[in-house]
Image (cartoon, rainbow, N blue to C red; front, side, top):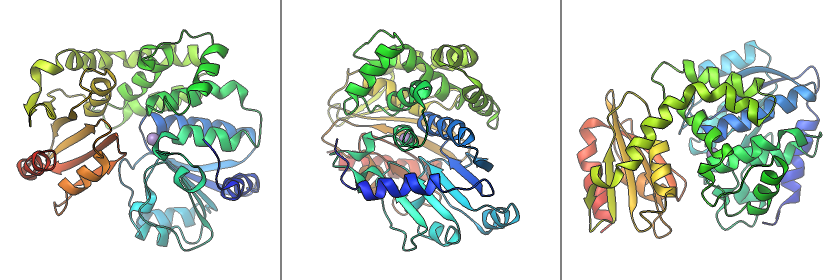
Amino acid sequence: MKITSQKLFDKVVQTIDKISSKDKIAIFYDGDSDGICAFTLLRKILERLNKSIAIVSHEFHGNVQFTQKHLTVWREQGISHIITLDLPVDHVKENFTFLKDFKTIIIDHHPSRNKPEKKNIILFKPEFFTDMENPSFYCTTKIVYDVMSKLVDINDLTWIALTGLIADYCWKDWEAFLKEGFKKYKIAWKDNLWETDIGLLTKLISGAGAFDDKGEALNKCIQSMYNAENLKDALQKLAQFSIVNETVQNYVDHFEERAEKLNDDKLLILEVKTHYKIVSPISTAVHTSGKFPKSFILVIQTSGEFVKLSARTPEQWDANKILQECVKGFEQANGGGHARASGGKVLKKDYPEFKKRLIEILR
Ligand SMILES: [Mn+2]
């Protein structure tokens, strides 16, 4: 990977460097493994640099919609800087209007849709500063790690960068970095990185997010990640969430017999019935198992009025585009993410039509 815009990279480093002790930062981050690792890193490092964080929030996932309410709170609290992590803030153009009076850095690796016009908003995505063929594989955690390592020694935090990379399946593009990191922590290398200690940590983080308890477990997990002094400590602190992994593993082990097979096995759909929110960990695990290299994998779960969707695809399809296409025109629906891994939701009543469209596209 080559940096193609050192100027943009340096601008982000300088903007963070220039935050004074009087400034106040608001951080919004995705509550998935990459987002949480990115946030943990950023929080720890900003504190090392004596910069003050006034607001943190993981209220958004998948799509971001700032409102007048946010603006009011930012003004009341005297926020000067807003940093967003792993969130496609640019997908909703109106967000730029709410951010226009704040120094903003959008650190994200989802394909861009809109560009900010104002100079105080920096849209920092690998598609704008690297030559990567698939910029999605430069995960948010690694971007934060690379930027912040220019400002202070963060050698003791490499394990968090490794965790973010494995969580978002960015294995191929960062093999040298991963191998060096594994050596440093004396962790045995495996071709399936999910089966390593760091793989386990990513599963425990997504496990915490799977509890249907209004985010209580997830918040506990986020605090534990922050308090953890090293990888071993993090694994111990998060072990309490391993129950979810057993449920995930059960679905993965029985995927073949339980999945609905369509279009000559080009499309495999598994419906999950549990109170854990686990469509994404299951689809990831099935995809990375390598057992279905030619299938579009869709895992669905009914939750309230919605059907939640998680898709994983081999090279020949772009799940981001396909899901966007399949949810077009549906109320309260969304779909998209990355080419290999995407998610979304549709109202229950729209699911049959969604499925019909998907079958049609994958013919
Ligand atoms: Mn991510």
